[in-house]
Each structure stands twice: as structure tokens, then as C-alpha cells.
Amino acid sequence: MTEVLAPCPGTVLPLEQIPDPVFAGAMVGAGVGLDPDAGPTTVRAPIAGRVVKAHPHAFVIAGADGVGVLVHLGINTVALDGAGFTVHAATGDTVQVGDPMVDWDPSTLPEEADGKAISPIVPVVVLDVPAEDISGAATGQVVVGDTLFRR
Image (cartoon, rainbow, N blue to C red):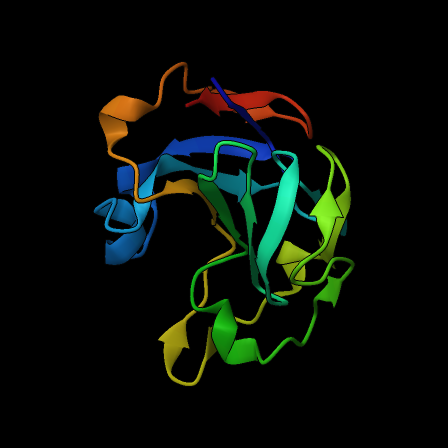
């Protein structure tokens, strides 16, 4: 069993409340959303493993069991072309739980970019895993390192 920890502080939302049909419909996998606390924060690795993808707005870490956990910093934030994000890890790096991944300030996001609404909501999902494969989803307010759910 893998515990997926909160990568940033915020309020846990059910997946279906994420303002993006791909995440809300669990098309990429099961998990939760985080409405991040306002202000500058360092987003941290929610599991230990190898960084499979590292972008300013998102990263994927593959754990020892080979399953990837995606952390996506906001919705439609790819349109920001990296502005407002400072990346600390690169594709191929090995990370431990809690290692710094990206600095950002969700309170500074524009309302839209490239004609698309921007949201600060942070999906945290286990890729290609159905909802029934996760358990113990947190509710309410979490801080970095709290358990979000187990897989």
C-alpha cells in the first residue's frame, strides 16, 4: 500500500469538483483535488520515487510499485508557459517524500490565459487507477505531509 501525501497545504475536494472534465471524470486516474492555501508555497513530493515528468505546472513521480502520481498545479496553467513557477526537480531525478518540487503562489494566478479560465485547484491523482483502488481519502484542511489517500 502506498500513502499519497499532501504536496501543499489546502482544502481537499472530491475529484468530481475539480473544474476540468478530464480530472473530474477520473479519465487520467483516481485521486482528489486540493484548493491550495493562498500565498507562496513549495509543492513537495507526495511519494518517493523517480520523476517521470517535470514541467513548471505539473509533475509525475513513479513509486517503487511503478504507479505514477500526478500533481497538476492549477487548471489550464500550461498556458502560462512556466511563468510564476520555479522548478526544483528534473525528469529522471530520484526524490524522497517531502522533497521540494516546484515553488508557486496560487494567489497570483491570472483569471485566464489563452482564452481559458485558470483555476488554482491542484489535482493529485494516481495515473490509470480506478477510484475503487484508492481508500482513506482525507477531507477538510490538510498541511504538507498529511495523508491524502492510500493506494
